[in-house]
Image (spheres, rainbow, N blue to C red):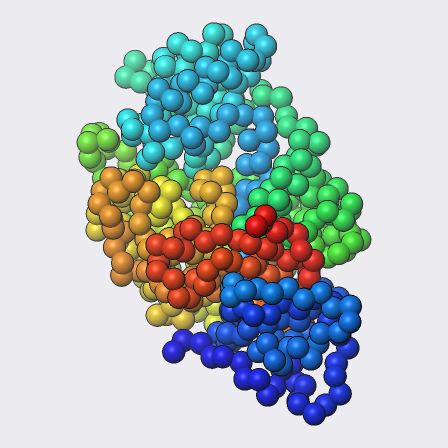
Length: 574
């Protein structure tokens, strides 16, 4: 048996025969409580006072905390878990995209996509920008995005920018290219690529942030109020999915929105923010100054809900866009009949190493976006070099995504975790589902079976933390729980299991990666991430027990109630 049931004779250090404790504010009982503590214990009831868990155990033992003013909730057999935590989501920016642009993730074909864009074009005043995001060639029937000519045919002179679901490439129309003054003579920006056709003309496809920014910098900025609305909308969605914590990427205007909401007491999640470090040592120094300033500000905010957790460095691109930096060339196949190379680093390796040294010396955690095997090796080696020069325990430098780590990278991760409490993969199992009909094309059939090697991590004693990379995939963490176990693609274009099952983990492990292990990566494992006495009562109540239901049911779990610091922040209508 993988878990132990709490005994009724001892709860929170209070023995039978002792005086009754001070009554709790709230008691949840008659349920199944998956504590995710060190023993993976299972209980029946939880008592909460002043926002924290004061007792966990059987119904009979926890009844000692029920007083005249205690609110008692009958769980009626439902299951309680710790609130789920997403260690890599673009919560704020994706929410803002949804406010100002068209959600193209709904489109199952190019005809549907162009219909959505045309409807926005027709509703937009002449000459103003039309934006869309989240188109996914794995979902689109044609397995490709729209072309320049297809956009020109429907745009009626409006400049148009449509971002791919990965946020690593975008297609724009001729009006947008003209505004940005991109033509056959325009050189690729550092870390980016402007695609050209056989005659040298731009195709409208821009790969990586530096290239997309040539166009997006001409689009009116999202307003502070729109960002504040995005924060509140994102929190509401998280609560409805049993989620109570997130690590988000921020630019200054986005951090300001979080700060404003937190100042008003409305930040009912643990928000851990990474500050964008840019592509140069100079931009990294500016980011460090901002981090140091914001850490002073965070201490003045009420509640302790908002943190600056470190710096984010984007070191390569995406696998679906074939810009992730690998040792091997991407496969040639029916969708890519000509060689496409092996991707590239968005930052010069020596510059990246200096950026890591800068942050490490300042005691700042680094999260590096690294998808390709070559990039992952560079990231873990840079962490090892920095920590050898200035040994610091507990910075928890992370490798964001870590699709295809080499044996060398896994060995270094193991050593970094043991010696420095660093080198943690922050993974997104949902990619195997939501991008599961494009990733096999990028990696080939054999390599695909070893993407996101969760089982190998555990065999080597490596802890990993999970997330969604929202809006690359849907925000709900239950999808990631399921995908960690099932490793199934959305449509099965390349069969039901192109990623194999060798690297699958059980649901106990998956739940840890969204709770106690995730809490470590937002520097909050002593306060949240498990249902234990003394911790905040960040809890999710579910309609089924993930430990006992069939794997297919994990994806269909429904959150019935969410508590943040002991307060009910979501309750599903009966």
